[in-house]
Image (tube, rainbow, N blue to C red):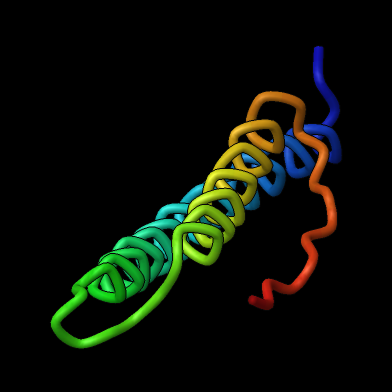
Length: 89
């Protein structure tokens, strides 16, 4: 038979887990939508009517974005979060 104290701890943990889950959903919605919008804006840079760039610059942008996506994927699969370097052309 469980003691009253362990029942309270179980209830508290369940509530904390729900709070963490709700916070995850809230932040994921905000951050993923912002990232998708920002990636779309980066895609606008490919418009040669408005911008001039060379193939090396384009490849560097694509490589940086892909590395970032790969790092996020690895973080979700392993649960370990790595550091990310700042991008600069």
